Image (cartoon, rainbow, N blue to C red; front, side, top):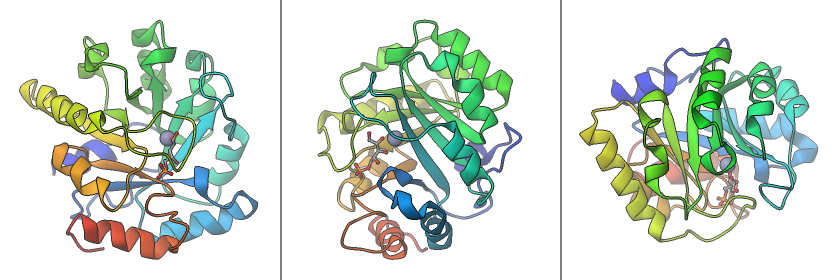
Length: 246
Ligand code: DX5
Ligand code: ZN
């Protein structure tokens, strides 16, 4: 199956998607940025039990984005307690310097922002050499043409549907047509590239994003870490909004 093979295909020495053979058409990447950091192990176990496919780890440096979050030590600790593949999102300046560390800490997927990579091809090659899969992230105002000459080299694109840095923001509406346009480019080139979306992936927005062409959904406070729902209920409600069973 195309989507399963792309998301779950072997690429590193770390765990791959446990739902590799599942009939699910879309993948839920749980953004633990919004989890209870005082009880991370408990939160990750809940995410696993609820049936999320990936763990999305937002790394922020206070430069590229005006916020701080976790570093490689936290990833390495989490690596010991879960088999969920790590979907690591580097919102940092000079990611080239740190990608090896984050792969070694257990990442299956590494997202790097084009806005931070003057030598994008070189950084893509480094991530692949280290054995992880490459996602290229684009801020809402960054055009799709920044993917020219690299789309053939990567496993997926992370379309930021909010400006990166904080949870609980509102969708930037123009990103929906951006997903559609990207899907069209991928189709025309007959590539096996997934489209991940990150930011305000809510019960209402997720179906629009999927309809536009997204198949990896990064989920935070808008759905599976919704303040009024439990993680299990959030995952179930999200899958229901996409009209397929848990
Ligand atoms: C945004 C982060 C997201 C965030 C999305 O900078 O990269 O991963 O957690 O979650 P919500 O649903 O709160 O927008
Ligand atoms: Zn993210």
